[in-house]
Length: 350
Image 1 (cartoon, helix red, strand yellow):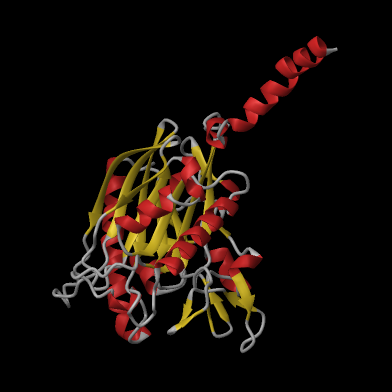
Image 2 (cartoon, rainbow, N blue to C red):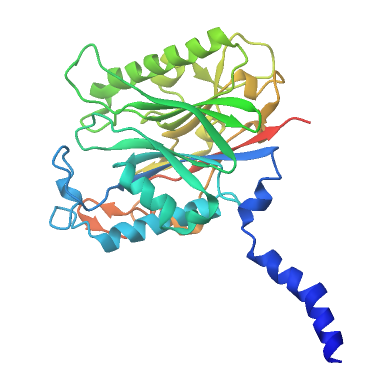
């Protein structure tokens, strides 16, 4: 009987046990037909250190927001929780982030949270933003290869001394194909919507020029724009200057298409102002990813707003729900962000 038990363990239980020790990422390498891309404005992901080069004093332990290491690490783990949930069993292959302070917070996010099992690496450049608020890019290094990256400087000709956030460009190899990705966080509406319109229009023009340069080289280039544009899909910065509209199956000379337009008429979005939900956070893609021009397509031709219940809280003033944010003014709420994350699925055509 002892020999029979040993044989059963050796050939049945031991292989099953060893199987459970293998990382999930090992099996994800086998699937080169489906890739998830997410974007998330994480609402002021600062580290508690005082950077003398930027105006980050509010997010220090003695600052206005009393930003402690305990709160910082809670926020890191909350963000990781979002990405571990947003795509089912597998976290996203690529992630664009807005409102991150520096490379240190990305390092901590990749290596000290539940994301560390998935071989995440990051791309980041310090921008001239006075508060030190930047954009960043995470990628699973066992699934994605970075070929090139650089910041795209944005200087307003009408305010040349203004220090603005850069746009982040990343050229990535996905399976055997090249993807061009731009991560954006355009000028906010703080100080008045009308007064800041020209600034977002200029961001759109800079970005459009970069897109046109890529399309001149290859009219079927795979281009993905993501970010918090601080404008809605119907605003002139998006429609007139970036020239991104809704995709229609008939032939068109347009080259960029906004995947968030279907949400406009549904009062569904990523950010809530009073009772209004709007899509400040958007995915915009080149025609090649919607028409049958190359190897890849956007699954269902649309983006997804990830509105899991743990990201929301009751809105007692305006009804329904609202985002469960980290701060409301100086009051610490302990939530996730004042934005909801979005995602798309890149699917290889059969």
